[in-house]
Length: 554
Image (cartoon, rainbow, N blue to C red; front, side, top):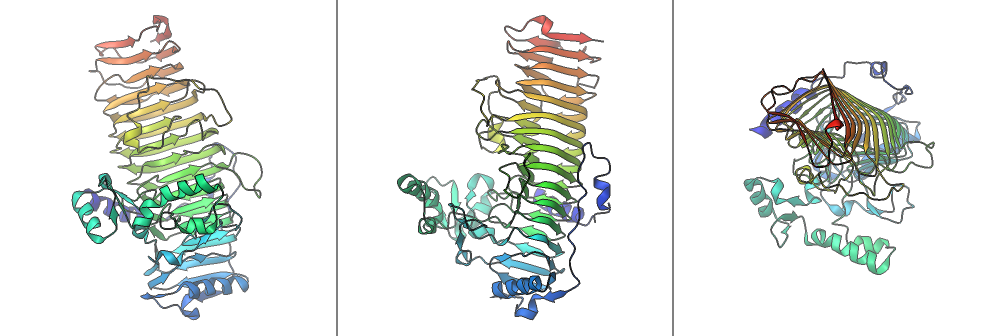
């Protein structure tokens, strides 16, 4: 019943056309941002059928589609039409000044034959590490688009492994019956023996040889998986309308791109799809993601601040990004930053989004090996329901596990480490007007002893959850007029944190403990106009915490 409800909701939300003009998304931003421009294309149009494509679902159309794109580009650009039909194809590459337009009723079916996707030394042809050619790619292309109401299907089932724990029993039985191979412990299914052993083979080759050749990578090809759409170092990009589904890995990965608009896009995969992120922005600047619908097996909409390209100016790698009016259903996180943050993040605005049934609602993750500066993040008007773990999570000690595993960490155990250039720094987050009905924990801040999470401001946040807040190694945290309603206390557990301020707000009146403070470094916890008189024990102080740490003002 749950899956049927999700499918219905996705198609209802997908019917909501983007009503705002482009400028409306940037008129009241809390930071300056260049005005985005849509790519402009010549009037010339051509159908892939003019180059011999046959939409019968059996004819391989790779060359016909690529020829149509190349011919269009050679004429100065225009629109390449994919008409209704099932168009079987291998990988295709977009070119500058070309709009690949999928008409309603068009299904671009990427081939399930792995041999159709050759190994390449990166999109630039210069990398030491080989990758599988993505089903759709572009490198250093300008003014490109994928538009229309058609569907692009990635045949991900021939690439991905599956964890038994992520499937129902009937699903697992059907998968095993279909072929492939199950690991000796019975916990994973792989499409082939070569895929299952690929990781081990690759690690052994790297140990013995160091730098690997193409032939070495060929031995592990069935283990490697391509991202479905990989656009790298492109400028002026538009994705508007299509559905991207069943990717081998990430669905849409934009890397080192600038002046990007992603709108009215639907991204769908099985909830058990490993690493099937929805929309990923890696080192991108000046981006709008609007009115998109995501239901995937990993992160929903995610910023991945890695290295910038040689064509980009110095500065934070993810900068000036607006995400608005989006819907996320199944996903590890609705909106996510990380886990790599070493490239830096600045000037992010997330507004008017709905997250239903995600593992985490707002998720910001990094660790001591992947960190950088993340600042100036503004989040407003977010609705959430039935969040499986944390409604809002800041985690600077992310260990790479699923959310339900990560939340089992004991935050009372704090271990300091030396500061390095990869120590994550999260600061200046402004989170306002949030409603969440149903979560395991309301808000979790897990900083580092050597680098607290700093300057986080919550205003008008309402969360009904099983457990309240945990603030570990935080500094300058404010909650203004918030309502946190856990089923069990305390409402907030402060651990080794300082300058924590609660002002106003409503809190449950029948809990055993309102505020718990532990850790000898905790100081200056300030309660202003907070009514906790009905709590059986308003304040509980841990060992070595002095009473004057908590200050109360009526």
